[in-house]
Amino acid sequence: MAIFSKTCEYAIRAVFYISHKSASGDRAGLKDIAAGIDSPELYLAKILQDLSRKGLMRSVKGPHGGFYVDADLLARPLSDIVEAVDGFGLFHGCALGLKQCSEINPCPLHEQFKSIRDQISDLLHRTTIGGFNEELLGGLLSLKK
Amino acid sequence: MAIFSKTCEYAIRAVFYISHKSASGDRAGLKDIAAGIDSPELYLAKILQDLSRKGLMRSVKGPHGGFYVDADLLARPLSDIVEAVDGFGLFHGCALGLKQCSEINPCPLHEQFKSIRDQISDLLHRTTIGGFNEELLGGLLSLKK
DNA sequence: TGAATAAAGGACAAGAATATCCTTAATTAT
DNA sequence: ATAATTAAGGATATTCTTGTCCTTTATTCA
Ligand code: FES
Ligand code: FES
Image (cartoon, rainbow over all chains, first blue to last red; front, top):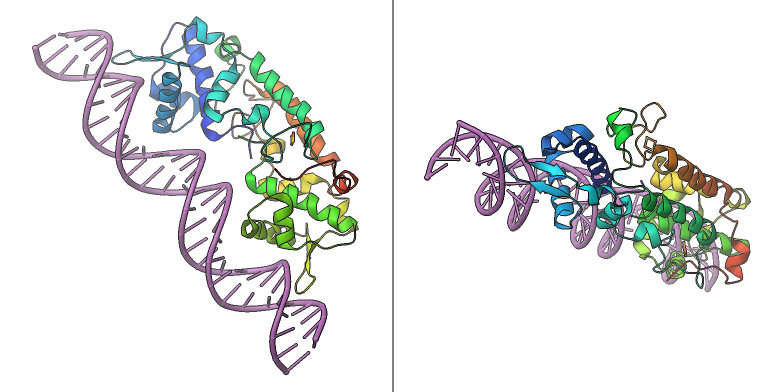
């Protein structure tokens, strides 16, 4: 198992890709993005449509259209994307799948897992959608292969 | 998304359940385990069969038969179970699904994620199958609900 | 206005994970 | 030996995730 669903991995990579394009003032077309993050184009379309509907992505139809993020979205935490796609499980769920993670009825891994889960949560809340634009523009970070 | 697959959650809970029964010298029957960890009985059967085949579980057929773990297995790390069920992805995979997690071609989350992933790995390698037997016998920890 | 372009949307297809059913094999107790 | 019990194994069913196809809508440009 991975931390994120495949759908969420695509979503995050796409959002980072679109963000760094937006930073240069460009919009990103579906083909461009799919090639840039190495994802199935038509599946990615669904994911971006979904993010659009939820207000986590902007788009324009027609020639020279495409996807982009505005200043507001650039500043949003990555956790917003993760929540929209994978829900709250990663932030609040029990490691062993108990219906309710709690101090009252803790599973064996609860104490140690809680701390790790909080770190994941912190990381995703601290990281913004636009937070890696410089490194991406500079080619220091990768979104594919 | 959760950290573990559902199958792996069942596997870990079952292993802990069987372990604490074994500590009292008892074997655990399928029905008993399924009720004890709140899992679908016949699906759990498959999981335990699989662990048996891989040498991570012992079993005896017939009346008063059931599943148990010996001293050797009690001391094995939980990571053995996780690896057997979910593979190595959790320990080595890229957070964003890049084919290869590496320093050379890191994804944006690499630096921060690496540390978290290592903590998960440490936790699972440090924790043994029998490590929670006292707390489970004492009812301090829960494997269901 | 009309043609071309690109995202939106609905429906469907393929695959993987989860769950169940039924028969077989091993063990125990009578 | 026989019957009862319990795990093993193979096949199938269901559900969810992932991926594709095709039509519609909005926008741009000539
Ligand atoms: S109860 Fe399992 S992680 Fe909190
Ligand atoms: S490259 Fe993504 S976590 Fe290492």
